[in-house]
Image (cartoon, helix red, strand yellow):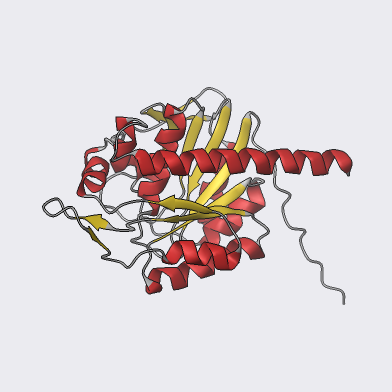
Length: 277
C-alpha cells in the first residue's frame, strides 16, 4: 500500500513586512538577545520601521531588556496588538506568561505559538521584523521557515572555541533549511580595562571573523564586552538608545547598518529572480 506524505507548508509573506531576519546562535550565553534588541533599536533610530519577535519561548528575556511587560491587547478581529517599546513593535511569550513560571511545551505547541506571533499579530508596515531565536537548532527554526519566507539570518557568537563550534552548527542549520546567512557578529569580543585602558581578550578575539571568512559569509562586526551594555539590558534601557554617536553604542549601529544593507540587497535579488522566472 502506498504511503501518503503531507506536503510541506508553503511559507506565506506577512503583508506590509518587507524583511524578516532571524537572529540565532548555536548555544546560549553568547548575548544573542542583547544583539537582537540593540540592533532592533539601532535600526529604529536610523529611521526604519522595526518589529521584534521574542521566539525564545523557554527563556523570553526581551520584555526585561526592553522594560515592557504589559499583556498585549486582543483586537476585535482576533488579531493581537503588539506592545511598543523604544520605537519598536514587540511580541513575546513573556507578556503572556510573565514571572518565573517556566514554559513547558512540546513541538506542536511551539509551532502554534510561532505561527501566532507571525500571522496573528497586527504588525502593520515594517521595514524589518527581527526574530530572536532560542539557542540551538531546534523546532522553532523549522516552524519559522515553514511559516514565512526569511530574508536571511544573523549568527551571533563569542570568539571562544566552544561557542564557535556551536555557531558552525547554526550556520549549517540555516544552510540546510535554505536560509541565507547575512553575516556573523562577534559578541563580547574584548574588554577594555577602565584603569589601564588595555584590551583584554577574555573570550579570545577574532574567531568569529575567521569563521566568517572560512564559510564565505559577511562579518558584521564585533561588540565589546562592556558592563554598561549588560546594565542597560537589565534596566530595560538598551545601550543603543544612546544613539549612533555614543561610543558604547557604536558597535550595534555598525551591525544594524550592515544588516539593513545586506537584507535589502537580498530582497532585491529575490525579487529579480522572481520576475525573471
